[in-house]
Image 1: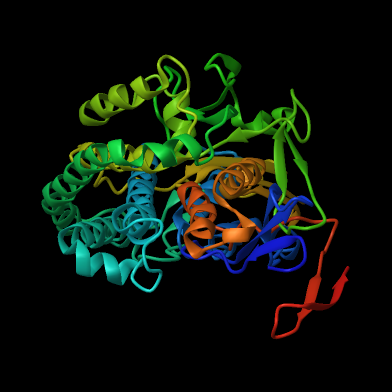
Image 2 (image 1 turned 180 degrees about the vertical axis):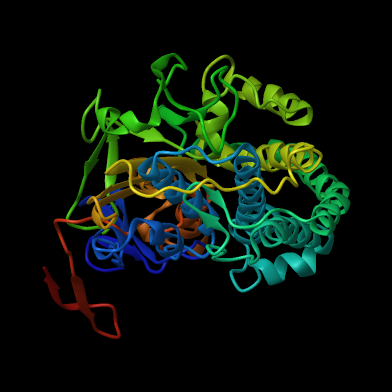
Length: 476
């Protein structure tokens, strides 16, 4: 605690580095809270001057949790630059590794990062409230998480050669090698255990919800717009499709436009206290044009999932909203489990597709267009890669809107709501602050690849004595 601020530094059990600053009124009540991303990487700038075909490999290094999402969005942008559509088997294989990406990333958040709060309690001993405490208390649940994450990573490895940064496999116009019979059989044989683990966990979570209603009510529970990709008939989509935005009541605000038109609907703002950009819905303006992306948003905007078990689960999920969007950020956990179920069903469908082992997986060309936009749904939401190149294929301009960034305005609204509900300066204890962190975990930000704000380069240095007194404070 420093003067009229409470600092949570670092925010724990998330991917990347951040702090939360809670600002207090004169009467010690909470005024507002800021989610501050504290590191800068700047992929947009240092990729300028690189050949376009290197972009999937370079940009996938932005993140070790969801590199496949960057590979796919980047490859789709490069597909546009060369002006060709990949063969159908290449698209199916890309979709398959994307299913693996979703499964392993969602499993990481739910089982390893968030479940310690849900199962052990938000006020439990922080030395036990972690994956090791979960293993001790709920070994079967922890093992399910390990199996699911392994299954997702196995999909990526069997298709693309490596579990992380498998950029050698993908290329503009398709992919470099097909899926072998041996590897396809291995994945098909692994499906039943993955499905069983998902269904058991989903059923367990639904039973737990009655005891978590206080958190459901207070963890980022407010109306916003929602954005994501859908199929032409409005189904849940992760790899391709059109952009849909619904308003807080569930009515279409933007109905299925081509993703290449994203600059017409999304603006990008910056603030001097964070390295992460603040995207907003242009029709409303900044800062009121708040929208959310990710699992909760995708289920809110989708009419159906398109697979039997996930459609049944989606029907139950939508009852929470009573014909309106499900607004509580806490339900990202619920949505994440439904998406794992959807991805496992899709994995089975793809692995039994007669075309999946075809060797016709690549089409080759060079620069036919000087601009390309690739959009895919990363685990955390809509991921945008937008490149401009010269006639020789060298990148002259790059804009990336990372999935995590879309939720930036909502992060600050959510932590402010939670802090106002739980944080009391005169009786401050660790569990209060953990709840503020927990609402961020529900969003599941991935900050390593989301630190791209350009224009302000804020440095905030605080010199604090051992008794907590602020001795000096410098900003730039």
